[in-house]
Length: 204
Image (cartoon, rainbow, N blue to C red; front, side, top):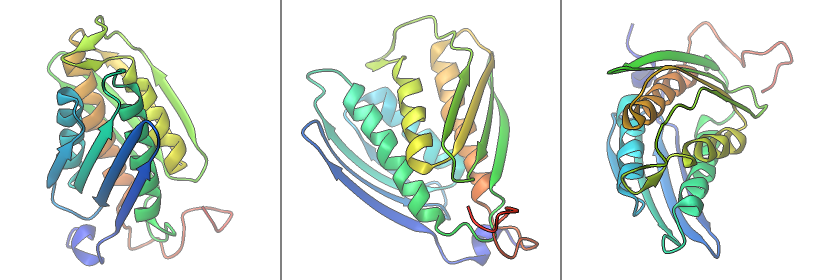
């Protein structure tokens, strides 16, 4: 059987958000091939968003202009908000999708677990934050939590992370972005046995 991404019309979203702190434009295709055009002004964050796109086999174009003269907080958090909105829009009515996704990903000494439920109820849990350093390059490590919290609530998804092991902050954070992309890819995949939405309520 062909991969579900080959059997469906492409699910896409375009979200533009402008505030007094940031101006963000994000185009997302869930049924892509891993093509990324990313610019946020924060080198390490660009690297993470590129990893998310490529390992989830999504396509994404992201342009974010923020008040980096303050710090990276607004840019990273608002990008999370916009990405969450784009995921929610691209998934659509959720008919036929698996809804749940999970992955365990090794990144050298780091081991990350991620689980996703696109059930329409936002909740975020992140256990274990042994980053050991306040920054990786020009990226504040405390913004990892802010980013994924924003994604989960904007997308109305249940998102859990467990950092099972790791000592290198770069490895841990990159493992989280990659692990999330794999779990989300699984959750958004079509399953031919699901003819409506995967819920006893009949709606998600």
